[in-house]
Amino acid sequence: MGGRGGTFLTTHWSLIENVKSEEDPDKVLIGTLLKRYWKPVYCYLRRKGYKNEQAKDLAQGFFHEVVLNRNLVQRAEQSKGRFRSFLLHTLNQYLINQQRKQAVKSRIPEDKLVSLDAMDMAVLPRTIADSAPEDSYNYAWLSALLDQALSEVQAECCAKGLETHWSVFHERVVRPILHNSVSPPLAEICRKYDIDDEKKAANMTVTVKRRFRKVLKRLVRTTVASDTEVDKELEEITQYLPESAQRF
Image 1 (tube, rainbow, N blue to C red):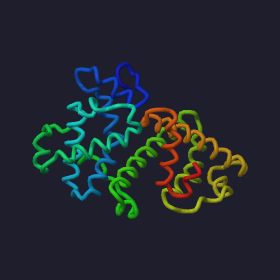
Image 2: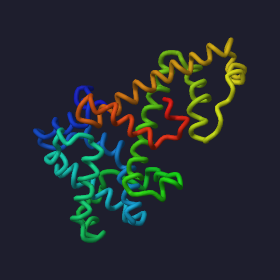
Image 3: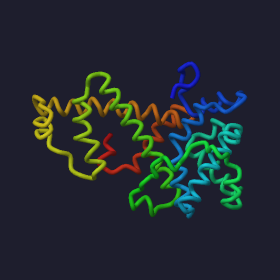
Image 4: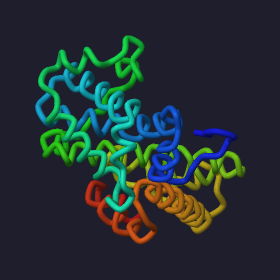
């Protein structure tokens, strides 16, 4: 995620502004958009009625044309607000312009921008898989965002010698959400991780929760045009989370 000189620009909007004056699209922009948005785009296309291979071809064509051929960069305006909404609008415009699957394939180079065959296809819960395309898009986007936030927090805890803190947080908060199960009692967690008392285990959980909120807020900030939109975006995100996760 380094970019030129090891400096990573803080927002997607900043990345786009940075490449407007470049001769070629910045690889940091390409990598960032693919990492964050290919699953949401793919899920959206599936819910729009495209079969697996059609959706993958369209996703390839979309990222190749709007990123590498700079259509997205030239159209981008930070005043349009949330980046994911802007990207979805651009995707719909792209779909309107596509006549047939073969036309998309013919415009993609043989050495594709990224091989979707090598990446895991998103698995959506039944309630989301049967929902509107926009909901599938938003759910997949949120899943990728939360995965990144949790990975960063875990790495941060390990780097600071807080491995037990992370384990307690994962056992008490993350695992129950992922498996839709009840959180284990603090007494059980204390026995498992050799923690002196329940209050200490509870404080460990709170410490990691705070780190998680901080990281999540920073990641959300990269997708909106201003600081004032962050809280609104976080509030909207909660509608896709189970009730137990909304206390984050």
